[in-house]
Length: 341
Image (cartoon, rainbow, N blue to C red):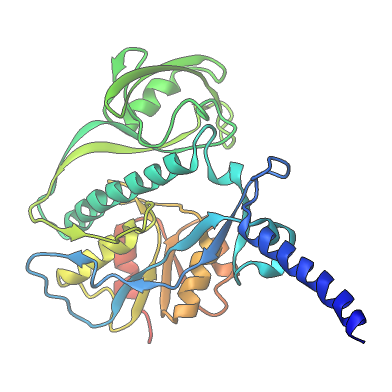
C-alpha cells in the first residue's frame, strides 16, 4: 500500500512543480509563442482625496469615480489555461499593447507622460467650461495616438509635437489637416517635429481615409500642444496610475469641487481622454473598466461615445451607461438627466 501511494504522490508533486513554473514564467520568455498581457478589472475609486482645488465648495453630495485596469504580462499558465486568469480579464497579444519598437519600460514612460498631460488638460477644460479665465497658447500639434498598419506606425510616436509640414509652420490640428489635405492619397509629406529635446524630420506617404478614400491621412490622432495658464492652481495626484483615460473624471471632479452639482448625491464614474477643446476621446480596456464600475456599485458610468459606449453596454448588466462626445455634453447630461441613487 505504501509503495502504491508513493507512485501516486510523486507524479502529483511533478505536476504541482510544473504548474508553479508555468505560473511564474511569463509568456514570450522563450520566444516560441510570443508575449501576451492580461488586462484585469480594478474597482472604481473616488477622486475626492486626489484632486485639490483652492476655494473648493462642493455641493450635492456623492462622489466622482475614476476607473482603471490592471495590465501585466501573462504567465504561460494563464496563456494555456483561461480559467487561471482573473475574472473579467482579457488576454491581449503584445503587438496590440506595445507600439512597434517600444519596450515595456518605454511604454510605461509613455503612460506616465499621458497622465501628466491629462492633469494639465483636464483643469483647463473644466475651468474654461465654468467660465474661468484660461489662457492657452498653441505651440504645435501633439501626437496622442499612432494607428497600427498606417504610414505613421513605427515612425511617429505619442508625445511627438508636429511644428511644420514641408517646412511650413503649423500650430493647430486644423492647420495640419489643411496642409496634408492638399495632397492625393499616396503622395508623400515631410513633417518637422519636436521629440524629447531635439528636432526631427520624418518623411511619410499618405493613404486614403477608410471612411473617405479621397482624403489623405498618415494615421495619427492629434491634439493641441499648448502653453496653459490657469487662474488657480489645481493639484491632481493618482500616485502610480497612468494613461490619459482619467481626464473626463478629473474635469468632473474639479467642476464638483467648484460648486457644480454633477453627482446629485450619487456615485458617478467616468472614463475618457480629454482634448484641449473639451472633446472626449476613446480609451482602452472598456470591458475591464465597465466590470470594475459595476462591481463597485456606482450609479452611472460616463464613457466616450461610439465604439467605447457599445463595448461598455455589453458588460454593463444593468449599470446605466451614458455616452458623451464632450465635457460640455457631460455637464448637460448630468444636469438634465441626473443619476438616480
